[in-house]
Amino acid sequence: MAVGTGYPETGSKNRSTIHWDMICDMRTDSEIHVDGDLFYKNGQFTV
Image 1 (cartoon, rainbow, N blue to C red):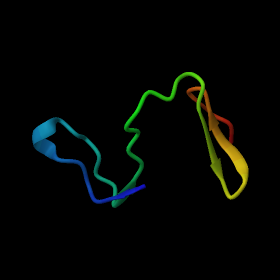
Image 2: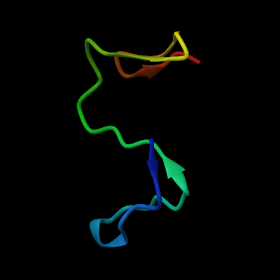
Image 3: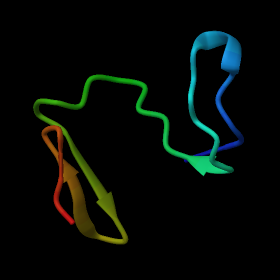
Image 4: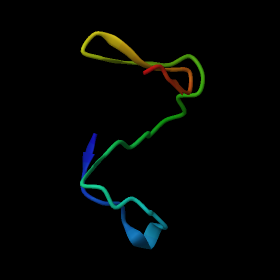
């Protein structure tokens, strides 16, 4: 999670106050768990 909008000079169109920055390739062999529940796996949200 990140706080603040994206930098317009980088081409960002993010205008939200809170957003999620993916900083690595998570399309294969990856998982994100939130409060013990699988939330994201191999490039797909599971919720």
